[in-house]
Image (cartoon, rainbow, N blue to C red; front, side, top):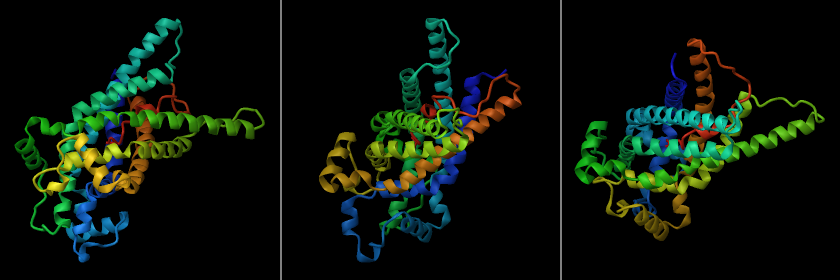
Length: 344
């Protein structure tokens, strides 16, 4: 019999990869917008000052690099997503089993509900482990995505490097620690699932209350998979707005290299925060947020929907005796990683 944490890890990795492929063009555009400094935009010739925005940037990438330009760094991102989601869900399941066993031992019950606090703690610990293990992969993927800026700036002869070449470049420029560039904001961003979880639980509670009142105090309809999809999307929207500035700082730190101009090279997190605030103001921390919001919402909702189905199917194939209900478990959203993304 396959351990439940393995089932969670495999299904989470597969669902994360599917969501990444579908939303990757938006992820690429978001990275380009986030790493585009205000100063750079002011020195561009008039021919380069085209209308900005998600659609305009997508068309610009296609014009300069073809459709494949929207998927620059996809290989590294798929690897990062598979490892990230697999590691996250594996550790989450393992840690949650420990807390459930502890809860049952202390309460002398068979209850699986460990409460909001322990669920958030488990999500936080799993997220930290995930960040430390997978940051090198995301560093490579972000650097590959950001190479599109060299083409935008008129350096059309720059050939986008592959994953191995990018690894060699990072190591040559920064040493082994260069692969953990941006790890500090990434660790702080582990709070994203916590914010996501709290918003989801609040929205679901309000929806259930509304349905209970609408049904005259009778048995209200339970939360359906469709409800989970749109509630997850709204919750992810709120979490993304709160944590996006850190995501932007992380993207700029990871994309900084020999092909970036001196004004976009930062010595660390504090230097990036200070210079972005000084040269671009508050709005500078939210560049590319529109594309990221759409990408994050779609990715989180797809990940949730696909993973739940994959977990159920995997359990059914392995003939494991579990009870599947129409309603999601109370801590479902807490298991999502910040599309870290991976959230990216």
